[in-house]
Image 1 (spheres, helix red, strand yellow):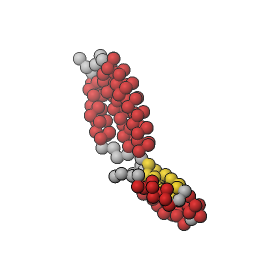
Image 2 (tube, one colour):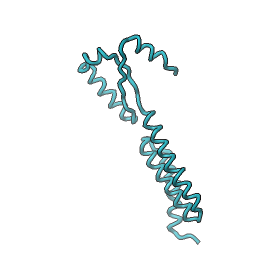
Image 3 (cartoon, helix red, strand yellow):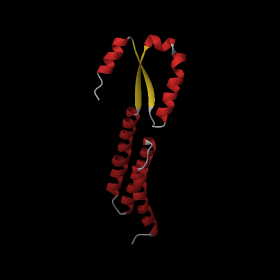
Image 4 (cartoon, helix red, strand yellow):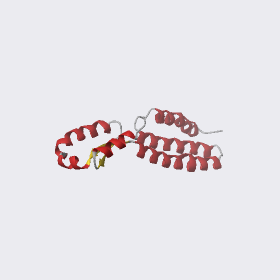
Length: 132
């Protein structure tokens, strides 16, 4: 017969799963996914499935979280093409707009990355390669 502690730990599983689903910040969702995997591994170990618990802890939690971090980190970037020569001359002119844009993107956990281009033709060519 299982103790009340086991039932309390089992109640944490759907609670942490709901927290993962409704989390708007992707980094906090990754932390919650790690907690969810740890709780699942603990439940498996308590119920006598040590091999399943070890697999969940290693593959389901550690490997998945590592891959998710790489995917989230690389996908949350907005790239803005700028001309090299004009960017240096008018840096003070565009700085308030860039600061405002960075502040707006920060609300959605996005980073702004400026991509310099040598001339307008290279910038236009880069834009024409994008297929939406």
